[in-house]
Image 1 (cartoon, protein in one colour):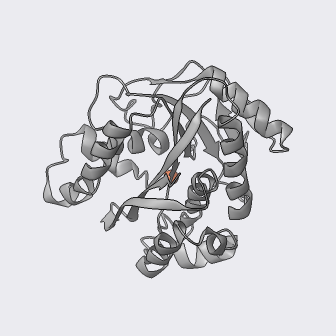
Image 2 (tube, rainbow, N blue to C red):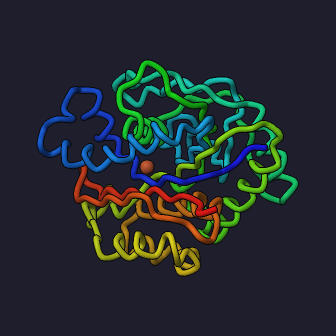
Image 3 (cartoon, rainbow, N blue to C red):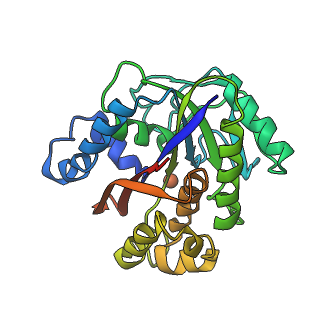
Amino acid sequence: MAKLIAGVTTSHVPAIGAAFDNGKADEPYWKRVFDGYLPSKKWLAETKPDVVILVYNDHASAFSLEVIPTFAIGCAEEFPPADEGWGPRPVPVVKGHPDLAWHIAQSCILDEFDMTIVNKMEVDHGLTVPLSLMCGKVSEWPFKVIPLCVNVIQYPPPTGNRCYNLGKAIRKAVESFDQDLKVVIFGTGGMSHQLQGPRAGLINSDFDKRFLDNFASHPDKLIQIPHLEYVREAGSEGIEMVMWLIMRGALDKDVREVHRFYTVPASNTAVGHLILENKR
Ligand SMILES: [Fe+2]
């Protein structure tokens, strides 16, 4: 049977992808960011997942404001990198795992989570930047990826509690899939940042650090945070952090924190990153 063994959270700042693609990763400003992921690359290379379920939000690349699914799961064979205005990122095409993706869609829908099934989709920096941070420069990604998009762009996004419970449903789905697969789940986005308006540039490290401190052992405190608190404390784009709670819900209650990294800023965003493993 498939096993969900660990989770990764990370910011997915687009400028990190641009720095990576344009050979700036060794410049001091960016090296500070990339160095925080050196232990993570080693961990991932040793963990060798077969499949990564990658929770992220599409930034008007695959979905416009004409259609806004709350939760969408990518069931295709592959997902090309999207052109976000400067041509597609020079990274490998993402290979999917349609059998597991369809199984998760079925299991979650029968568990009353109404997933949108996506059979054709380009994937933007929300998905490819975490892969670059965790895998480095590669000719192909070392595992299959199931994209799971969450609407955190247009009000109303789902609540943290709903995301956490979706994580539990995903865990149940994975562990009822009858192939021996090692599965890791990524929850991406955040941390505090605001891209527009009078508070553009806002970063709140106290909020971010409290979030990181509670994430492994007290997610019950985080799932109750209302939308307005995210906006007030973490900026208008801080709401992306509800996606981390899908990852947390998919893991055991008791987890081991393997790695933590926090730095400010990357572009105009606080970068946060955790790796958690199930203890059993
Ligand atoms: Fe984002």
